[in-house]
Image (cartoon, rainbow, N blue to C red; front, top):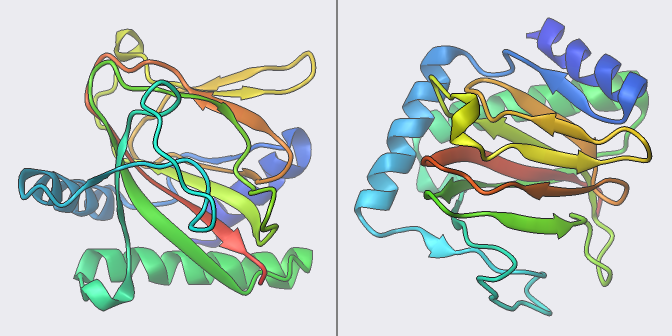
Length: 197
């Protein structure tokens, strides 16, 4: 577990984008993916908005995915196992890097073929509590032709990351503009933020 944590932190320090190839076990990733499938089949996902609760809007020309917020109140065994992993990472991050993280929020994200999310920052202008963004992918057998890459914009060093199952990405929420390129296949992830309120 600590090896995947250290991989996220080390690669973040090197390139402003942390990457761990095995932050989640394959079993947990598969169980979370099945949970997302079930939620979608039961029409429990909602159109993703832009902005926070104080300034929320919906614009399919900017963002076209659907989401479902993870919550301990759901009492889902696999979501709770995911939260245990996130809390262990926060403890490790705060201890090793004095990050000062005090909370988190995560949601499932589902992109159908043709969906995308244009360039954006994750931190709200009217609320700076989001400190780090984390994305964990749930797509086995993902092919290059499926598209749907995360494109992170950096000066002279744009980075394109394929959404392969188990891979987790970590970066500062107020620092890197990024986008999700048009996907040609169903694309699933858990996306969220480590916060300091």
